[in-house]
Image (cartoon, rainbow, N blue to C red):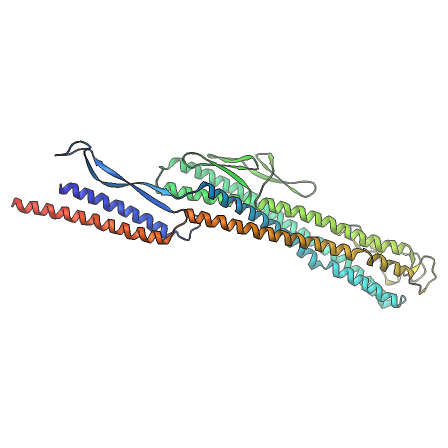
Length: 443
Protein backbone atom coordinates (compact mmCIF):
# COMPACT_ATOMS: atom_id res chain seq x y z
CA UNK A 1 0.00 0.00 0.00
CA UNK A 2 2.80 2.40 0.93
CA UNK A 3 4.45 1.69 -2.40
CA UNK A 4 1.30 2.73 -4.20
CA UNK A 5 1.07 5.84 -2.08
CA UNK A 6 4.63 6.74 -2.99
CA UNK A 7 3.86 6.35 -6.70
CA UNK A 8 0.68 8.37 -6.35
CA UNK A 9 2.51 11.11 -4.48
CA UNK A 10 5.33 11.07 -7.01
CA UNK A 11 2.90 11.42 -9.92
CA UNK A 12 1.12 14.28 -8.16
CA UNK A 13 4.39 16.08 -7.48
CA UNK A 14 5.50 15.70 -11.10
CA UNK A 15 2.13 16.92 -12.38
CA UNK A 16 2.21 19.93 -10.04
CA UNK A 17 5.75 20.73 -11.13
CA UNK A 18 4.66 20.67 -14.80
CA UNK A 19 1.78 23.01 -13.95
CA UNK A 20 4.17 25.31 -12.09
CA UNK A 21 6.46 25.36 -15.14
CA UNK A 22 3.55 26.39 -17.38
CA UNK A 23 2.51 29.09 -14.89
CA UNK A 24 6.08 30.39 -14.76
CA UNK A 25 6.16 30.55 -18.57
CA UNK A 26 2.94 32.54 -18.57
CA UNK A 27 4.24 35.02 -16.01
CA UNK A 28 7.59 35.42 -17.79
CA UNK A 29 5.83 36.14 -21.11
CA UNK A 30 3.09 38.41 -19.76
CA UNK A 31 4.35 41.33 -21.88
CA UNK A 32 5.26 39.28 -24.96
CA UNK A 33 2.82 40.18 -27.77
CA UNK A 34 3.67 36.96 -29.64
CA UNK A 35 2.82 34.70 -26.71
CA UNK A 36 -0.57 33.10 -26.05
CA UNK A 37 -1.49 31.94 -22.55
CA UNK A 38 -0.96 28.22 -21.80
CA UNK A 39 -2.94 25.91 -19.55
CA UNK A 40 -2.25 22.29 -18.73
CA UNK A 41 -4.78 19.49 -18.40
CA UNK A 42 -4.39 16.43 -16.19
CA UNK A 43 -5.61 12.85 -16.52
CA UNK A 44 -5.91 9.96 -14.11
CA UNK A 45 -3.47 7.07 -14.23
CA UNK A 46 -5.06 3.65 -13.79
CA UNK A 47 -2.95 0.72 -12.56
CA UNK A 48 -2.95 -2.24 -14.92
CA UNK A 49 -2.51 -4.80 -12.17
CA UNK A 50 -0.39 -5.94 -9.29
CA UNK A 51 -0.21 -8.12 -6.18
CA UNK A 52 -3.53 -7.99 -4.44
CA UNK A 53 -5.17 -5.81 -7.13
CA UNK A 54 -7.63 -6.56 -9.86
CA UNK A 55 -6.34 -5.67 -13.35
CA UNK A 56 -7.20 -2.03 -14.16
CA UNK A 57 -9.13 -1.93 -10.94
CA UNK A 58 -7.30 0.87 -9.09
CA UNK A 59 -6.16 4.45 -9.72
CA UNK A 60 -2.48 5.16 -9.40
CA UNK A 61 -2.16 8.95 -9.56
CA UNK A 62 -2.22 11.67 -12.15
CA UNK A 63 -0.15 12.84 -15.09
CA UNK A 64 -0.06 15.88 -17.42
CA UNK A 65 -2.18 15.31 -20.51
CA UNK A 66 -1.97 18.32 -22.83
CA UNK A 67 -0.62 21.84 -22.95
CA UNK A 68 -3.47 23.94 -24.27
CA UNK A 69 -2.82 27.30 -25.92
CA UNK A 70 -5.46 30.01 -25.67
CA UNK A 71 -6.58 30.92 -29.16
CA UNK A 72 -9.38 32.64 -31.03
CA UNK A 73 -9.30 32.31 -34.80
CA UNK A 74 -11.88 35.05 -35.23
CA UNK A 75 -10.10 37.57 -33.01
CA UNK A 76 -6.75 36.73 -34.60
CA UNK A 77 -8.26 37.36 -38.01
CA UNK A 78 -9.81 40.64 -36.88
CA UNK A 79 -6.54 41.83 -35.36
CA UNK A 80 -4.67 41.05 -38.59
CA UNK A 81 -7.32 42.69 -40.77
CA UNK A 82 -7.42 45.91 -38.77
CA UNK A 83 -3.63 46.04 -38.50
CA UNK A 84 -3.43 45.63 -42.27
CA UNK A 85 -5.80 48.57 -42.75
CA UNK A 86 -3.74 50.76 -40.43
CA UNK A 87 -0.50 49.94 -42.22
CA UNK A 88 -2.08 50.74 -45.58
CA UNK A 89 -3.22 54.13 -44.30
CA UNK A 90 0.16 54.80 -42.67
CA UNK A 91 2.10 54.01 -45.84
CA UNK A 92 -0.14 56.19 -48.00
CA UNK A 93 -0.06 59.04 -45.50
CA UNK A 94 3.73 58.88 -45.22
CA UNK A 95 4.10 59.13 -48.99
CA UNK A 96 1.69 62.06 -49.22
CA UNK A 97 3.47 63.93 -46.44
CA UNK A 98 6.81 63.48 -48.19
CA UNK A 99 5.25 64.84 -51.38
CA UNK A 100 3.76 67.81 -49.53
CA UNK A 101 7.12 68.56 -47.93
CA UNK A 102 8.81 68.44 -51.35
CA UNK A 103 6.39 70.98 -52.83
CA UNK A 104 6.22 73.29 -49.82
CA UNK A 105 9.97 73.32 -49.23
CA UNK A 106 10.54 74.16 -52.88
CA UNK A 107 8.54 77.35 -52.29
CA UNK A 108 6.64 77.49 -55.57
CA UNK A 109 3.77 79.60 -54.25
CA UNK A 110 6.02 82.22 -52.54
CA UNK A 111 8.17 82.34 -55.70
CA UNK A 112 5.09 83.11 -57.84
CA UNK A 113 4.05 85.84 -55.39
CA UNK A 114 7.57 87.31 -55.43
CA UNK A 115 7.59 87.28 -59.24
CA UNK A 116 4.29 89.14 -59.32
CA UNK A 117 5.61 91.64 -56.77
CA UNK A 118 8.73 92.33 -58.83
CA UNK A 119 6.51 92.98 -61.87
CA UNK A 120 4.53 95.48 -59.80
CA UNK A 121 7.72 97.27 -58.74
CA UNK A 122 8.92 97.41 -62.33
CA UNK A 123 5.69 99.20 -63.30
CA UNK A 124 6.84 102.18 -61.19
CA UNK A 125 9.86 102.71 -63.47
CA UNK A 126 9.99 100.42 -66.53
CA UNK A 127 13.42 101.68 -67.59
CA UNK A 128 15.16 101.05 -64.26
CA UNK A 129 17.85 98.44 -64.81
CA UNK A 130 17.89 97.18 -61.23
CA UNK A 131 14.13 96.61 -61.25
CA UNK A 132 14.42 94.73 -64.53
CA UNK A 133 17.25 92.63 -63.09
CA UNK A 134 15.08 91.85 -60.05
CA UNK A 135 12.26 90.61 -62.31
CA UNK A 136 14.74 88.44 -64.18
CA UNK A 137 16.15 87.00 -60.96
CA UNK A 138 12.71 86.28 -59.52
CA UNK A 139 11.77 84.57 -62.79
CA UNK A 140 14.90 82.42 -62.58
CA UNK A 141 14.14 81.51 -58.97
CA UNK A 142 10.55 80.65 -59.89
CA UNK A 143 11.74 78.24 -62.56
CA UNK A 144 14.21 76.71 -60.12
CA UNK A 145 11.50 76.08 -57.53
CA UNK A 146 9.68 73.89 -60.03
CA UNK A 147 12.85 71.91 -60.64
CA UNK A 148 13.48 71.60 -56.89
CA UNK A 149 9.92 70.36 -56.36
CA UNK A 150 10.38 67.82 -59.13
CA UNK A 151 13.60 66.58 -57.56
CA UNK A 152 11.82 66.31 -54.22
CA UNK A 153 9.06 64.24 -55.78
CA UNK A 154 11.72 62.06 -57.41
CA UNK A 155 13.19 61.40 -53.97
CA UNK A 156 9.74 60.65 -52.52
CA UNK A 157 8.99 58.22 -55.36
CA UNK A 158 12.39 56.55 -54.99
CA UNK A 159 11.74 56.09 -51.28
CA UNK A 160 8.34 54.53 -51.99
CA UNK A 161 9.88 52.24 -54.60
CA UNK A 162 12.62 51.17 -52.19
CA UNK A 163 10.13 50.47 -49.40
CA UNK A 164 7.86 48.55 -51.75
CA UNK A 165 10.70 46.40 -53.08
CA UNK A 166 11.80 45.73 -49.51
CA UNK A 167 8.21 44.87 -48.58
CA UNK A 168 7.92 42.36 -51.42
CA UNK A 169 11.18 40.73 -50.37
CA UNK A 170 9.99 40.65 -46.76
CA UNK A 171 6.67 39.06 -47.75
CA UNK A 172 8.46 36.30 -49.65
CA UNK A 173 10.83 35.72 -46.71
CA UNK A 174 7.91 35.50 -44.27
CA UNK A 175 6.11 33.09 -46.60
CA UNK A 176 9.17 30.83 -46.65
CA UNK A 177 9.42 30.92 -42.86
CA UNK A 178 5.73 30.13 -42.56
CA UNK A 179 6.11 27.12 -44.87
CA UNK A 180 8.93 25.79 -42.66
CA UNK A 181 6.77 26.36 -39.61
CA UNK A 182 3.99 24.36 -41.24
CA UNK A 183 6.40 21.47 -41.71
CA UNK A 184 7.46 21.63 -38.07
CA UNK A 185 3.86 21.75 -36.88
CA UNK A 186 3.11 18.54 -38.78
CA UNK A 187 6.01 16.76 -37.05
CA UNK A 188 5.33 17.78 -33.44
CA UNK A 189 3.04 15.92 -31.06
CA UNK A 190 -0.28 17.73 -30.65
CA UNK A 191 -0.84 19.14 -27.20
CA UNK A 192 2.87 19.51 -26.45
CA UNK A 193 4.71 22.65 -25.39
CA UNK A 194 6.60 22.59 -28.69
CA UNK A 195 3.32 22.69 -30.58
CA UNK A 196 2.24 25.76 -28.61
CA UNK A 197 5.56 27.48 -29.41
CA UNK A 198 5.16 26.72 -33.11
CA UNK A 199 1.61 28.09 -33.10
CA UNK A 200 2.93 31.28 -31.51
CA UNK A 201 5.53 31.53 -34.24
CA UNK A 202 2.90 30.89 -36.92
CA UNK A 203 0.65 33.68 -35.64
CA UNK A 204 3.55 36.13 -35.40
CA UNK A 205 4.46 35.43 -39.03
CA UNK A 206 0.86 35.87 -40.11
CA UNK A 207 0.67 39.19 -38.27
CA UNK A 208 3.78 40.49 -40.06
CA UNK A 209 2.46 39.29 -43.42
CA UNK A 210 -0.89 40.99 -42.80
CA UNK A 211 0.87 44.29 -42.17
CA UNK A 212 2.35 44.06 -45.68
CA UNK A 213 -0.74 42.82 -47.53
CA UNK A 214 -4.34 41.92 -46.83
CA UNK A 215 -4.06 38.14 -46.46
CA UNK A 216 -6.73 35.51 -45.89
CA UNK A 217 -6.03 32.26 -44.07
CA UNK A 218 -7.34 28.71 -43.72
CA UNK A 219 -6.18 26.14 -41.14
CA UNK A 220 -6.08 22.35 -41.10
CA UNK A 221 -6.74 20.11 -38.11
CA UNK A 222 -3.23 20.38 -36.65
CA UNK A 223 -2.86 24.12 -37.17
CA UNK A 224 -0.98 24.32 -40.45
CA UNK A 225 -2.08 27.41 -42.36
CA UNK A 226 -2.61 28.28 -46.01
CA UNK A 227 -2.34 31.93 -47.02
CA UNK A 228 -4.00 33.67 -49.93
CA UNK A 229 -3.05 37.12 -51.19
CA UNK A 230 -5.32 38.87 -53.66
CA UNK A 231 -7.11 35.60 -54.39
CA UNK A 232 -3.90 33.72 -55.22
CA UNK A 233 -2.30 31.12 -52.93
CA UNK A 234 0.94 32.38 -51.41
CA UNK A 235 1.57 29.55 -48.93
CA UNK A 236 0.07 26.09 -48.70
CA UNK A 237 1.71 23.45 -46.53
CA UNK A 238 5.42 23.46 -47.27
CA UNK A 239 4.97 25.16 -50.66
CA UNK A 240 5.30 28.88 -51.39
CA UNK A 241 4.62 31.00 -54.47
CA UNK A 242 6.64 34.16 -55.01
CA UNK A 243 5.13 37.63 -54.85
CA UNK A 244 6.53 40.02 -57.45
CA UNK A 245 6.22 43.71 -58.27
CA UNK A 246 6.45 45.53 -61.59
CA UNK A 247 6.08 49.15 -62.64
CA UNK A 248 3.52 50.17 -65.26
CA UNK A 249 4.17 52.75 -67.94
CA UNK A 250 2.42 55.45 -65.92
CA UNK A 251 4.63 54.74 -62.91
CA UNK A 252 2.02 52.82 -60.90
CA UNK A 253 2.83 49.46 -59.31
CA UNK A 254 1.45 46.08 -60.31
CA UNK A 255 1.69 42.96 -58.15
CA UNK A 256 1.54 39.29 -59.06
CA UNK A 257 1.72 35.94 -57.25
CA UNK A 258 3.32 33.24 -59.31
CA UNK A 259 2.94 35.42 -62.40
CA UNK A 260 -0.81 35.89 -61.87
CA UNK A 261 -1.82 39.52 -61.43
CA UNK A 262 -3.47 40.33 -58.10
CA UNK A 263 -5.26 43.30 -56.57
CA UNK A 264 -4.20 44.00 -53.01
CA UNK A 265 -6.98 44.78 -50.55
CA UNK A 266 -4.90 46.31 -47.76
CA UNK A 267 -1.46 46.45 -46.18
CA UNK A 268 1.54 48.75 -46.51
CA UNK A 269 2.26 47.54 -50.05
CA UNK A 270 -1.13 48.83 -51.18
CA UNK A 271 -0.63 52.08 -49.25
CA UNK A 272 2.73 52.65 -50.94
CA UNK A 273 1.14 52.01 -54.34
CA UNK A 274 -1.63 54.50 -53.57
CA UNK A 275 0.91 57.09 -52.47
CA UNK A 276 2.84 56.54 -55.70
CA UNK A 277 -0.33 57.14 -57.71
CA UNK A 278 -1.04 60.33 -55.74
CA UNK A 279 2.49 61.62 -56.41
CA UNK A 280 2.04 60.91 -60.13
CA UNK A 281 -1.14 63.02 -60.08
CA UNK A 282 0.68 65.78 -58.18
CA UNK A 283 3.49 65.71 -60.73
CA UNK A 284 0.93 66.16 -63.52
CA UNK A 285 -0.57 69.13 -61.66
CA UNK A 286 2.87 70.72 -61.24
CA UNK A 287 3.59 70.23 -64.93
CA UNK A 288 0.32 71.99 -65.76
CA UNK A 289 1.22 74.84 -63.38
CA UNK A 290 4.69 75.21 -64.91
CA UNK A 291 3.14 75.25 -68.38
CA UNK A 292 0.66 77.90 -67.21
CA UNK A 293 3.47 80.11 -65.87
CA UNK A 294 5.51 79.75 -69.04
CA UNK A 295 2.55 80.25 -71.38
CA UNK A 296 1.30 83.33 -69.49
CA UNK A 297 4.70 85.03 -69.46
CA UNK A 298 5.63 84.03 -73.02
CA UNK A 299 2.30 85.19 -74.45
CA UNK A 300 2.75 88.62 -72.88
CA UNK A 301 6.30 88.79 -74.14
CA UNK A 302 5.15 87.97 -77.66
CA UNK A 303 2.67 90.85 -77.58
CA UNK A 304 5.19 93.48 -76.50
CA UNK A 305 8.45 95.24 -77.18
CA UNK A 306 11.59 95.30 -75.03
CA UNK A 307 13.57 98.30 -73.88
CA UNK A 308 15.28 98.54 -77.29
CA UNK A 309 12.01 98.42 -79.23
CA UNK A 310 12.61 94.85 -80.42
CA UNK A 311 9.87 92.26 -80.31
CA UNK A 312 9.60 90.38 -77.04
CA UNK A 313 11.30 87.00 -76.73
CA UNK A 314 9.99 84.03 -74.72
CA UNK A 315 10.44 84.59 -70.98
CA UNK A 316 10.68 80.87 -70.11
CA UNK A 317 11.71 77.76 -71.99
CA UNK A 318 10.30 74.31 -71.32
CA UNK A 319 6.72 73.31 -70.58
CA UNK A 320 7.02 70.97 -67.58
CA UNK A 321 8.14 71.38 -64.00
CA UNK A 322 11.34 69.50 -64.76
CA UNK A 323 12.23 71.44 -67.92
CA UNK A 324 11.08 75.01 -67.25
CA UNK A 325 13.94 77.53 -67.09
CA UNK A 326 14.58 81.21 -67.66
CA UNK A 327 15.03 81.98 -71.38
CA UNK A 328 15.82 85.72 -71.20
CA UNK A 329 19.45 86.66 -70.73
CA UNK A 330 19.10 90.32 -69.68
CA UNK A 331 16.57 92.56 -68.00
CA UNK A 332 16.39 94.76 -71.07
CA UNK A 333 14.59 91.94 -72.92
CA UNK A 334 11.50 92.23 -70.70
CA UNK A 335 8.73 93.49 -72.98
CA UNK A 336 7.02 96.12 -70.86
CA UNK A 337 5.74 98.20 -73.79
CA UNK A 338 3.21 97.09 -76.41
CA UNK A 339 4.45 95.79 -79.76
CA UNK A 340 5.66 98.51 -82.11
CA UNK A 341 6.72 100.87 -79.32
CA UNK A 342 9.99 102.78 -79.82
CA UNK A 343 13.13 102.12 -77.80
CA UNK A 344 13.02 103.49 -74.29
CA UNK A 345 9.23 103.63 -74.19
CA UNK A 346 7.66 104.13 -70.77
CA UNK A 347 4.38 102.67 -71.93
CA UNK A 348 3.70 99.79 -69.50
CA UNK A 349 0.45 98.53 -71.00
CA UNK A 350 2.04 95.19 -71.97
CA UNK A 351 3.53 94.83 -68.48
CA UNK A 352 0.11 95.53 -67.02
CA UNK A 353 -1.34 92.85 -69.27
CA UNK A 354 1.20 90.35 -67.88
CA UNK A 355 0.42 91.39 -64.31
CA UNK A 356 -3.28 91.01 -64.98
CA UNK A 357 -2.82 87.55 -66.49
CA UNK A 358 -0.72 86.49 -63.50
CA UNK A 359 -3.19 87.88 -60.97
CA UNK A 360 -6.60 86.91 -62.38
CA UNK A 361 -7.10 83.15 -62.03
CA UNK A 362 -3.39 82.90 -62.65
CA UNK A 363 -0.54 80.66 -61.50
CA UNK A 364 -0.74 81.80 -57.88
CA UNK A 365 -4.32 80.61 -57.61
CA UNK A 366 -3.45 77.35 -59.34
CA UNK A 367 -0.52 76.79 -56.97
CA UNK A 368 -2.75 77.52 -53.99
CA UNK A 369 -5.31 75.02 -55.29
CA UNK A 370 -2.64 72.33 -55.63
CA UNK A 371 -1.37 72.89 -52.10
CA UNK A 372 -4.88 73.08 -50.66
CA UNK A 373 -5.93 69.87 -52.41
CA UNK A 374 -2.84 68.06 -51.17
CA UNK A 375 -3.26 69.38 -47.64
CA UNK A 376 -6.95 68.40 -47.61
CA UNK A 377 -6.09 64.89 -48.79
CA UNK A 378 -3.51 64.52 -46.02
CA UNK A 379 -5.95 65.84 -43.43
CA UNK A 380 -8.70 63.45 -44.55
CA UNK A 381 -6.35 60.48 -44.60
CA UNK A 382 -5.04 61.39 -41.16
CA UNK A 383 -8.57 61.26 -39.80
CA UNK A 384 -9.11 57.91 -41.54
CA UNK A 385 -5.82 56.53 -40.22
CA UNK A 386 -6.64 57.60 -36.67
CA UNK A 387 -10.07 55.96 -36.89
CA UNK A 388 -8.52 52.76 -38.23
CA UNK A 389 -5.93 52.87 -35.46
CA UNK A 390 -8.69 53.04 -32.86
CA UNK A 391 -10.42 50.05 -34.44
CA UNK A 392 -7.13 48.13 -34.55
CA UNK A 393 -6.40 48.97 -30.90
CA UNK A 394 -9.83 47.70 -29.92
CA UNK A 395 -9.27 44.46 -31.82
CA UNK A 396 -5.87 44.07 -30.18
CA UNK A 397 -7.35 44.57 -26.72
CA UNK A 398 -10.04 41.98 -27.41
CA UNK A 399 -7.41 39.50 -28.60
CA UNK A 400 -5.21 40.20 -25.59
CA UNK A 401 -8.14 39.65 -23.23
CA UNK A 402 -8.77 36.29 -24.87
CA UNK A 403 -5.22 35.01 -25.28
CA UNK A 404 -3.06 37.23 -23.06
CA UNK A 405 -1.73 36.45 -19.61
CA UNK A 406 -3.75 37.56 -16.56
CA UNK A 407 -1.17 37.99 -13.80
CA UNK A 408 -3.82 37.82 -11.07
CA UNK A 409 -5.00 34.46 -12.35
CA UNK A 410 -1.44 33.22 -12.72
CA UNK A 411 -0.65 34.26 -9.15
CA UNK A 412 -3.63 32.22 -7.99
CA UNK A 413 -2.46 29.24 -10.05
CA UNK A 414 1.02 29.60 -8.66
CA UNK A 415 -0.28 29.28 -5.11
CA UNK A 416 -2.65 26.43 -5.98
CA UNK A 417 -0.03 24.33 -7.75
CA UNK A 418 2.52 25.04 -5.03
CA UNK A 419 0.07 23.69 -2.47
CA UNK A 420 -0.57 20.65 -4.68
CA UNK A 421 3.16 20.03 -4.91
CA UNK A 422 3.52 20.26 -1.14
CA UNK A 423 0.51 18.00 -0.63
CA UNK A 424 2.04 15.37 -2.94
CA UNK A 425 5.26 15.60 -1.00
CA UNK A 426 3.28 15.07 2.19
CA UNK A 427 1.69 11.92 0.67
CA UNK A 428 5.16 10.56 -0.04
CA UNK A 429 6.23 11.35 3.53
CA UNK A 430 3.16 9.60 4.98
CA UNK A 431 3.84 6.56 2.79
CA UNK A 432 7.43 6.48 4.04
CA UNK A 433 6.26 6.73 7.64
CA UNK A 434 3.83 3.84 7.12
CA UNK A 435 6.58 1.77 5.54
CA UNK A 436 8.92 2.51 8.46
CA UNK A 437 6.21 1.57 10.96
CA UNK A 438 5.62 -1.75 9.22
CA UNK A 439 9.32 -2.52 9.31
CA UNK A 440 9.33 -1.69 13.02
CA UNK A 441 6.49 -4.11 13.72
CA UNK A 442 8.43 -6.80 11.92
CA UNK A 443 11.32 -6.41 14.34
